[in-house]
Length: 88
Image 1: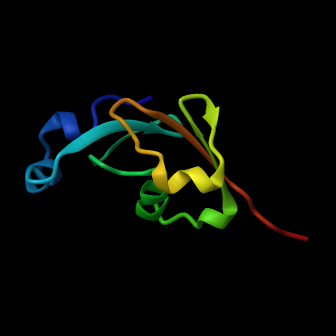
Image 2: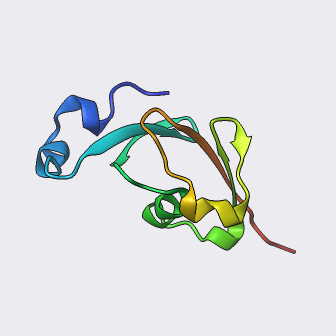
């Protein structure tokens, strides 16, 4: 995991986002700053991932796809997101 995220460093990006509360989470080992009140589905959308092609683990628990829209992400959460790739 890297050092401080934009939530902690006070960068220009963070200064511009101060009106929106932000939290730090870890996604695939990388520290990220995301809006408060984000669900797993919302995070996937924010990351530009297609829900039909991923599996998600939140804090070491594999989540069922039907639960993603109602599963809120808390500060300090650790997510592993695996993308499926088709091929021949």
